[in-house]
Amino acid sequence: MSGLARAERAELEAPAARTMRGLFFYFLRLGSFGFGGPIALAGYMRRDLVDERGWYSDDEYQQGLAIAQTMPGPLASAAPAGRYGWRCRSSCRPSCS
Image 1 (cartoon, rainbow, N blue to C red):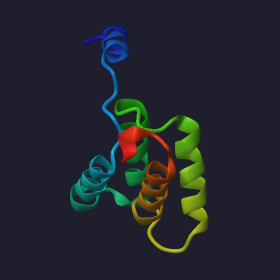
Image 2: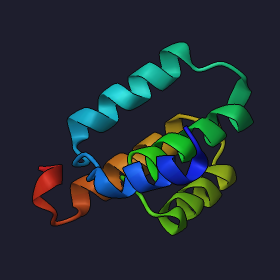
Image 3: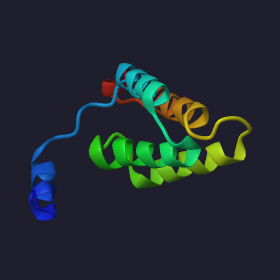
Image 4: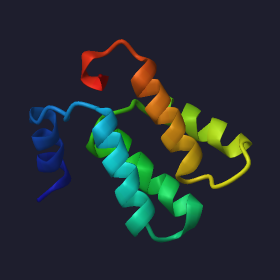
């Protein structure tokens, strides 16, 4: 499938709603089966959460990653997962209830 056809198909498909359950299972899968270290996992998260699922904008992801880089501990999963979960829970969107 060409890149143009893939882009057209992506425009027609509505992104799935972002839920706490969806975030939990995403990060569970990423933490269990992710391979390649923190930098690779950060790239996987961007691809999955911004490009494929559309749960976050690029700006939201970049801000979360910047905050995660200033925190001690594992870069790839703990800090971004907490931030994205907090952002989802603190928003007034009904899809995050």
